Length: 212
Image (cartoon, rainbow, N blue to C red; front, side, top):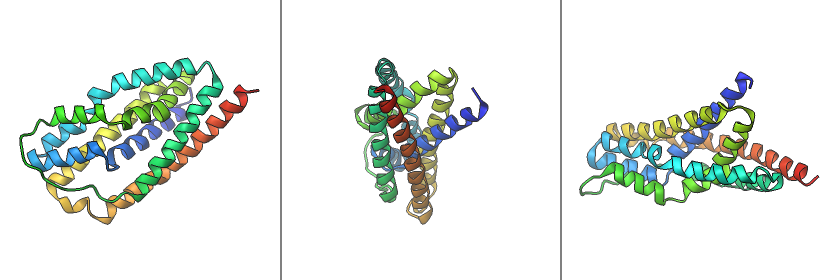
């Protein structure tokens, strides 16, 4: 596989991971809450929780999509659903404001809270079934190393961005309330829309070729 495809996969994983990491949601809220409550270390443990929870989700989604790959129109329909999901993410990311900076009281079990929040949230399941899973299946068909490169970019950006939020919150809450955070989210929203267009193209191709 050409080297530029590896870089493309790494970039795609990084953009999607950073978007998931920085967009307001249950896990990012928990990162902030635990950082305010118990310090940056607690926030970092929450940030790392997807590394413990996502492997079974990814394996299940990829297994289902691997079977669907034998029927190209079905895989095309999944790609179209993924495109719609990315457009929804882009819209929500564009409209998002700074995450809430509240500081609750009580004992902290940050890693357990992070694991439970991620397992019970629908977002990882939707993402890996509609977007990440199809990308992994297609990457595997081209090159056996490509899915691992995508995953490396995704999780470095996902965990790294949440860890960065924890550090910023630990140093100064005002950083997340500033204009810079909103500009980063809007740039990620534009990138998501571009990936949605690519998935739409691939889904349409699979539908039309599969039905030919």
